Amino acid sequence: MPSTHHDTDPGMTEAGRLRALAELQIMDTPPESAFDDVAWLAASICQVPIALVTLVDAERQWFKARCGLDFDSTPRNEAFCTHAIAQSDLLEVPDMRADARFAGYPSVLGAPHLRFYAGMPLIGEAGWRYGTLCVMDRTTRRLSDVQRESLRRLAARAADLLESRRQRILGESRAAAIAELLEALPDGVVTCDGSGTLQEFNKTARDWHGVDPRALPPAQWPAYFGLCEADGRTLLAPERVPLARAYAGEKVRGQAIVIRTPGMEPRTVSCNASPLRAPDGHSLGAVCTMHDITTQAHESRQMEVLAMTDALTGLPNRTAWFAELERALARARRADLPVVVAFIDLDGFKDINDAHGHAVGDEVLRECAHRLQASCRQGDYIARLAGDEFVLFLDHANPAAADLAAVAQRIQAALGAPLQIAGRALAVGCSIGFATATADQARAEHLLHQADAAMYRAKRDKSVPFVVVDAAQP
Ligand SMILES: Nc1nc2c(ncn2[C@@H]2O[C@H](COP(=O)(O)OP(=O)(O)OP(=O)(O)O)[C@@H](O)[C@H]2O)c(=O)[nH]1
Image 1 (cartoon, helix red, strand yellow):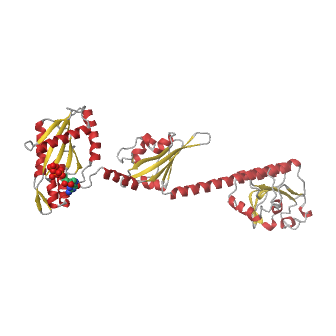
Image 2 (image 1 turned 120 degrees about the vertical axis):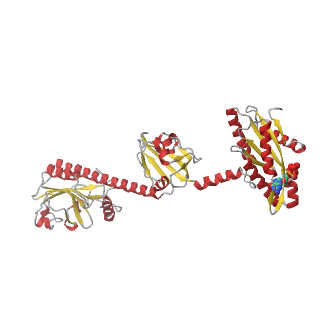
Image 3 (image 1 turned 180 degrees about the vertical axis):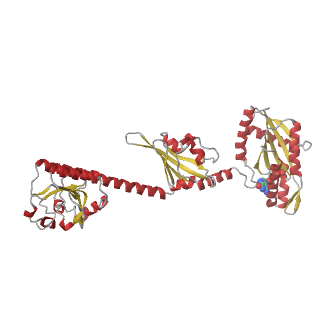
């Protein structure tokens, strides 16, 4: 039994005791069988008609449980228990009429004519004495040692009941504070329990997913919530969902996913997720936090696009060209298709620049880019390498001369048509070189180099409309 001395300890003030009592939030609550049992046992063991579990407030003492009394409180200045809670052990008064502290109390002088009182303080963990377990009788008497010890032990159990109430209230208020914090967070928070069922779904997560949580099996999360890989298109495989990865025991850091909720702009979020484990190691589920990185993702995609685009014409640039050429060669190798690359260089462009200025030259380049693109077939890939040089990957092309002649003719017709720029009628031509190779022989750099060489030959020899080289030849 804890032994405390708040009558002598300056830290144990009445104000502190009343605060601790108020924290229990127990005054005027309905009867509870556990406290009733304590009072009943106290009355039976002590063989008295009256037993109470009392709580001593500032103005009154209130009975949480009572046997043998038909009222539930008395004013504080008529409360015997005020004396009992001033000490830490049992207070036993065999005859209250013979005790100056009690002789003048109304319930001693008049009905119900109480004579005997024994009260044991209910002492909480921090030492506060909330009230008592007390027994009373209308005749004088003394308790046996066993009865005294029983009262002490029963009072300790009643104090335990009060402490567990304090812990429950503390837990509830902490949980409420955490729930409020979760709701107010600008990041999304999602949790699942030990069976993998979605639990927490804070306000931000609800806003982003557009729905409330449901008892959905993890395999259905991607389709139901529209969860995609960072590319925003590929639906996440169920085992790639960050919360599912954490539920499977993985610690996930910074996994970018896209939430595609119908009717909303796609949202890119960076996810951190962790398994939740009890101290003994068994799974309590998992938690995933999501931070909105839509703006950064958009900016970095824009940067990527800029890094791959020719600023003047809007065509793919040299970097993009080589990246795409490598992909196209891989496709051709898989399908065992021949590959054809065209190198196109404008003729007479320098003269336009020199005669009409750079701005007009720029406009000519833009118009030529547009015409080249318009003359391409679907699947062809055209890029501006530099200056007045363009390259073209011909998708599923037939390297036969007749077919290439048709391509060259289309390009030359497109570029050769008169240009109307800034009120001037201008004209450019072009020289075209083709490099062909079988899929297994084709190498990107070599193909381009050979197409460039073919184009130069065509530029030097104006008697031919284009030149084709076999890039497989050294
Ligand atoms: N307006 C403009 N001119 C550019 C740009 N980039 C390169 N040039 C110019 O384009 C011209 C390309 O020169 P050339 O390849 O000799 O032009 P060309 O007159 O077609 O001569 P050939 O290619 O030999 O037929 C040079 O004068 C460059 O300064 C650009 O972005 N805008």
